Structures are given as C-alpha cells and as structure tokens.
Length: 407
Image 1: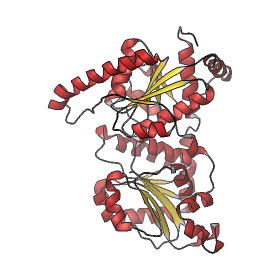
Image 2 (image 1 turned 60 degrees about the vertical axis):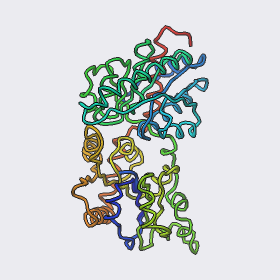
Image 3 (image 1 turned 180 degrees about the vertical axis):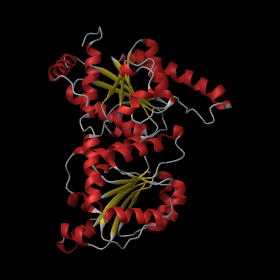
Image 4 (image 1 turned 120 degrees about the horizontal axis):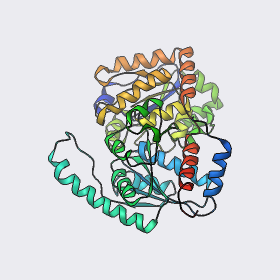
C-alpha cells in the first residue's frame, strides 16, 4: 500500500493534478505545500533554574511554522523545569489564538500587521508604523505585568514588536530562526538578541553577529518523534481498508491502490471536497490534528517547502517531493527546498513546471524505487537533530542563570 501524505497546493493546481488511484498501494502523506554541550554544564543550568519559578514569554504567530517550534521549546522547558510560568503573545485572529490554548498554554493578543510588498508602499510608511507602535506599547504593558526572565521569538510579524519591547526594556531576548535564510524581522531583532538559534550551519552566514548563533536544528513536537507503527497509523485514516477481512498489514502491503492523506488548508478544502467527496482512498481535511499519525502512515510526502514542514520530514525520515511556493516572501521556500535536496536528496518540482503527468510520474518513480526511498530516508534522519528542543531549552536556562536575577 502506498500512502501519500499531501500538504496543500493551490486549488488550481489540485484540480489539474488528480493522482492515479489504481497503483500499488502505499500511503503518501500530502501536507500544505549538535552542537555538543558539556553534560555537567547543562545539568547545572537546569538545576539552578529549577530552584524557583522561571517566567518565559513566547512571541510567535501567523503560521504553524512559527507557533509549533515555540510550543516544542515550551514543552522542553516545562520538562526541565516544571515550575516555569509561560505566556504566549500573538494576534487575536491568527491560528495561534486557538493552537496555543489547545496546547495547554496561556495566550494574550496584541495588535499586529505584516510588512507588505512592495516594501516602498503607503501601508508600510503610514499604517504599519502606527500599528507597530501600538503593539510595542501593549507589549511593554505585558512585560511589566508578567515580568519575564526571557522573551523567545520564533517568528511571524507579531513577534517583532514584542521582541523589540523586550530589547528596549532590557529583558533577555532569544530568537529562533526556522528557515535556511532569515526574514527581515529576525535580521533586525538579531542585533538586540542575546542568543540566535538556527536550524542549519549555512544560516549563520546570514546574520551580522555570527558569534550569537547556535546551530540546534528546528524544535519538533515530541509527538512526531514517538514510535507509532505504520499499521496502527493507517488504521486511523483508513479503518475500513485496514480491518477488511482481518488482513491488517498484509492488506496494506498487497492492495493495488494508492491511498492519500490530504491536508488541503482551509481555503482549498471546499473545492477539493467537491472533487473527492466520500472517496474511499482519500482522507481530505483542512487541518491535520493527528499529524504524527499522518507521518507514521506515509511512505512518501508531497508538500510545500515551509521551514518546519521540511524539518518534520527530516525528523521522521520520510522521502519527499517538494513544490516550493513562489508566493512566500524572500523566496524562503525555494531556498528551503534546495537545502533539502542537498541534505536528503529530496525531489524538487517548481510550480511552473508542474502538471498532473509530471507529478504522477515523479510519485510513481519514487515509489517504484525502494533503494532510492531507503537512501532518502537514511539521509533525512542523518541530517535531523532530534534533540533540538531539549538543547535549546538547556541553553535558554543557562542564559537566564547567567543573569543577575533570583531564580
């Protein structure tokens, strides 16, 4: 059984690239398209910070690629220091307003607005400064009331005013950059940051103050690292197929169909549902809450090239086809996809080259080449840093303990 995990592509592309549903079955997961530390030093930092209640603010929002790394770091800090108090800052209408409370952390909203393109626009010169000023003042109030020991920014336009307020107030500031090349906000904030955590060695070259950078990989949620069997994961998405006549794993391996788990995104869901409603071999959803099971079920991932998606692919060791979005600022996704091709041999298809024949051929060529799939999986796992969250948490505790505060 070939299971494909498919991260969302634009609606127009979805309609063109209908995948064949009569091939040897595998499950493809389609998703929206160390440094070594001294063990005694890390233990000392953890013990010192655990003496009392550490207060941490996270500034993150906009997309899951900014939110979930923050949640992963918070989980790691909580594991090292259960007394830690957390507060997440984001926008009232962003996905963080639901995702953060769902993850069990308190959340407060501040006004924010993105930098628009082109850069020399009326919005950026007149409206944006007003909103940033308003958000920074609100962030000052939050900082005064919560009195954090450290502020951690993981990106998204909402992180800028909160991190700026922290820098102006003299609060320890940490930023975490998921992309292979940083955006404008993190480049500016890096001038004030005490530590800069990056995912890749090559990213260091993009920052003016390289001595602040620490290569730790991207923080991946612990649930993605848990060992769930392919059989159990597939039963979650295709219970009727997996249970049919009690065939279980044999059915999943011997079936002559391609099974697809497809996260469409909210905007594309209605159109895609009208094309694949009630199809027995397609699971269609605007958002995957059981992302860990989707990765576990999949043989192949077809996806956009968002920074965290790429790192999740590395951490789970999945062969992948990446279709970088041409609409993301500063060409981040193309750079991420190129790096993935170098690190894990990922297949990259540009959107202007894509049609149903090219995508179908690429998928089948990969699924038919078990040696290639195994090599891609091996390279991906070798490139990943599975202990990223814990390492970042330990470094944050060390940073805070070096400050003249009572912990």
